[in-house]
Image (cartoon, rainbow, N blue to C red; front, side, top):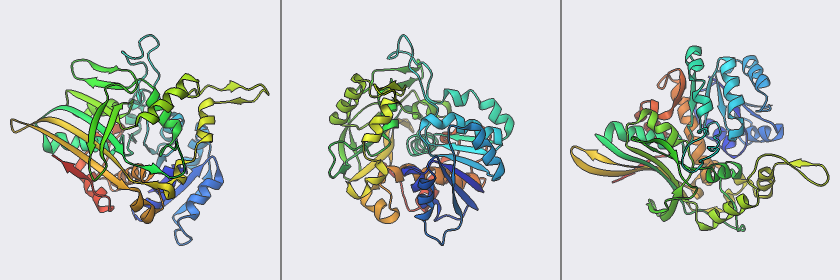
Length: 402
């Protein structure tokens, strides 16, 4: 398997460090708009690792990416960029006849009149609209296969197959007790993506109603996370699982809630009030045009560089409630990463490492033919057990709490 990895930021660099320990692929090209960043990701692996090379590619240039995939005889494009670049990369892979994987799906847009009641364009809609073309190509677009979405969706399918007869609710819950020395405000993941998902209307799915929206940060609840993280207040946030899980898992309700904390929520609200969450460029007095959200991202520390200052654990998981053998059952399937461990073992901070391991696991299953298919599919469309077994074999076990 020849892999084109597009994006050499925190997650992309962590992918290379994880993949370097596996033998399922022949070569991985690490591409980025900033060639120096791609070269640094490869150099960090050491001179003995010859299966990696660096290249410069503009993720927004569909034609250039298509040509490069063809010239380099790539079998798959792994997208590790932010969601702005999903569609050009997705379309480039289709045009080149390669498989495609991503960790975040095509962007949404709110309903113009009723943003907190009805869906406008949903996350992933643009990709699912192309499902027939992908099926006709015989190629697989495996979408949303990071940790959330991704592993959380695998958990949902596993619960449906092995733990429940009927499911009332699949509730993805994400929380952490991470702190960063020296910063009053330092997001542990891309602020561009965080702003996008936290300020858009969250989506909820109910069997009787379908998909609908609510207000950002609504329905707060305290969830007790495992392995010493403890109680964290979680709120509704827009996320791909709610758009993916109901397509393949039978449930009465699907939700996603994220443990943000009051300070983080108030900061995001302030950015929104000031218009600093906008992506549309504004003109400065000197004529320069800038995107306010890009400016915010540039003013904050790069999350990939925070590992040495970060302490604590992060948890991603799926809380499932339903019935088994005629009796009520409630379980939380989860995956915890300790930042001290991920830094010592891989040199990557916990949040980006937890995201990165999952597409590598998925790639290995695709390379071996364990997961196969054509069209636009989420992780819950496949057998979950090989995935969970391989995740454990990577040295990153998952857990379950009744």
